[in-house]
Image (cartoon, rainbow, N blue to C red; front, side):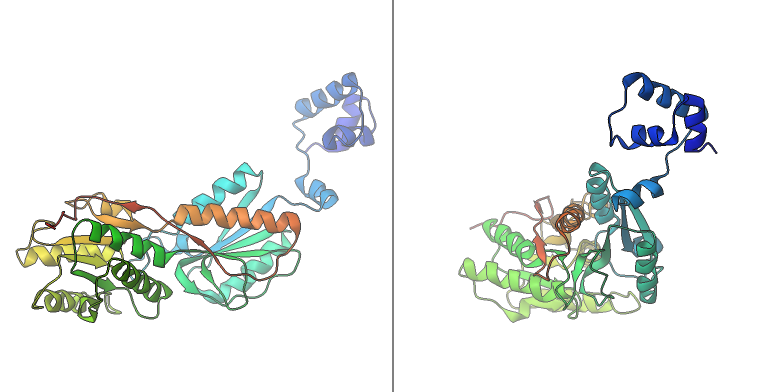
Length: 347
């Protein structure tokens, strides 16, 4: 492999002059620069990024820790939209900033997070992003002051800079749109109670009802998540109970699009048509599901790509101005995808 000394010898200049050409930190005559660049091309010389980063104190490397790679194809792990979309958003921002994103997967083992963080710091990463599979509270080792950390799709009690979805807003805008379509009996099939999104979305659901002057009926809220063995008996029982009400719902809001997929099948097994007999809405806007169902599914977007871009942008801010004090998580709002699974009700 060619060295800076080989380039200097071929170009007929000193190694220091070659360094000046590489770093553009001093004036060099045009003919000298041309000779050095020609020598580098002939020798196939590749400058040492490690050496440059030592001088500038900037490695250009950003670490990202996720479990998305090892979770791919693992149907036993309940997640919303693939968090790989979040990684794509972060990658786009870092590439535009001239940074290289190093991605490490936990393999589903939370104990691997700390050694992965340590490895990134050993490679002189300028900062790190931790990506969670779903909106949740996490507890991670504190990074050193010189290597800021941003949490994506999660938050902690220490106030680490974080970016999370605005779940309350997403559910509120969906329910408000259902009300505008004439629906008054709106049921909500929830995610597990220990998931932060559940309380936030139920709050958004109630907020939209209150804004429209519709009294909240607790009988219309039911647990819709599968059990630990991924069975749907409880979801089916919840739907049965809702449909047996004296005044049944005209629309079922599902905690995510995967749940809505199951609901379609359960309703059809009862001879009910979507949306002619009952409307269905989801959450995530997981297009692989929402756009392939028949009829296509109305769904509130879980803004994974936007969370990735905002997490990356936030990290770049922290790198430029130094580590920031703890703050409340930044909330990212998604759009509403209105499709044919919801019908207009007569007013």
